[in-house]
Structures are given as C-alpha cells and as structure tokens.
Image 1 (cartoon, rainbow, N blue to C red):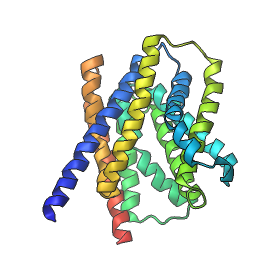
Image 2: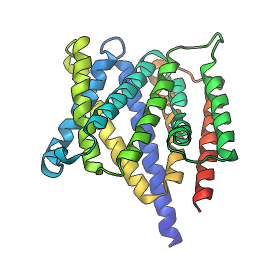
Image 3: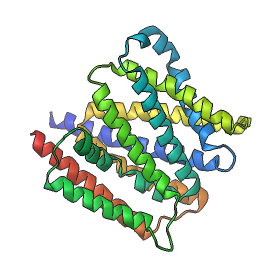
Length: 288
C-alpha cells in the first residue's frame, strides 16, 4: 500500500512539473506575440480554440437551455475574459517571473473573498497568511520604488478577477452541472471575445495563428494534467506544487529573452508560497 502511495505521489509531482512548463510556455507565447497581436485578439482565439475542441462533446451531452444561470454565465465569462486579458498584458509588458509571482496571490484572494462574501470564517493562521502574502506582493511590486513596474498591476488584477470567478463557481455549482458551466463559459467567452477583438482586429499571420493554436492546445493539456493530479492526490498537496511554475517561467524567460529574476522576485514569491501553504494547512486542520 505504501509503495502505491509513493508511486501516486511521484506521479502527481511529475504531472505538476509538466503543468509548470506548460504554463511557462503559455507565457512565452504571449510574450512572443507582444507588439504584434493585441491581448484582445489573443483572448478571443484562446476561447475559440477551446470551444472548437469541445463542440462535439457539447452537442452530444450538454443541454444549455436548462441552466438556471444564463445571465450569470455571461457575467462569469466576461470576468474570465478580463482576467485572461489582464494576465496577457502583464506577460507582454512586465517581467515574466514577476508577473508569475504576483499571480500566486490567487488562493489568498479566494480565501479573502470567501470571508467577505460567503461568510466563511478565517482564523489567526489565515490572517497571518494574508499579511505574509501582502508583504511578499509588496516586495515583488516595489510600489513607489525605482523598480516599480505598473504592468504588474495587471497580474494582480488577473489574480483578483480569477478569485471572483472561483467564488461565483462555488455558488453556481450548487444548482448547475459542471458540463453546463464549462459549455456556457466557452460559448459566452467566444462571443464576448470576438466583440472585443473586432475593435482592434488585425488578421494574424500564419505563424501567429499557429502560435495561438498551440496556446489553445497547451491550455487543454494543462487542464487535463491538473485534473488527473487532483484525482491522484489531495488538493492541499497539489495546490502548493503550482509554485513550480515560477522556476519554469524564470528558466525559459532567461533562455529566450535574457530576463533574470532578481532577489526581490524570489523573496517575495517565497513569502507568498509560505502564506498559501500556511492558509491551506489551517483549512485542513479545521476540516479534520
């Protein structure tokens, strides 16, 4: 039994290493398209390619008309599109490692939102985690300092918007099915994304279109690996492994763009990582 558990743990870690590099490649593609393809257009094609992959499944299995949340689906899709575009802007304009480190604030924003809007209790350990994460964020962003990059605020906005989406999903999933939630989200995102893309439309070249297609495939592979990892191991174990994304991004940013993550990036990211682990541990102890 112990041998099977160890094998499952190693497989989970291997999958999350793969997820880290898939996310890093996603960021690299966005940076390669910087200045050539607008973030609105990237957001549209991300939604479109995801929808095209799932259209046969949607037609066979999903009854869209029976969802009780048609208006909220559109709101959630708008927030999802906004979060993607904000993250793409951060990847295009800011340091990739810094933007990645700031996006790690996501789990803390979810916890804070659950406390503010869903009446979930938080204890002393979680409050300490929030303070620690805030300190880490300030170290990375360096507001008011010479190294301050306003583009990093887009990564912060992306994390906050994604947290809002997750909180909405938590409530919507009580009265709707996962299939309909996914299908409605992709359909609404594609429609909204097309509207935004048309404002700044410039037809991508074949090379750019190929990169956008690869990005869509990376997103699908990423989601598949995360899902399988969560089936093998507890979310409390899988979640912190997402921080492997930072060294993966830092490595590719250095190899491809000559970006070197500074000490502030690593120190700030480490504080955010510790804060997430601390908050996750507090939730597990409360549930036990």
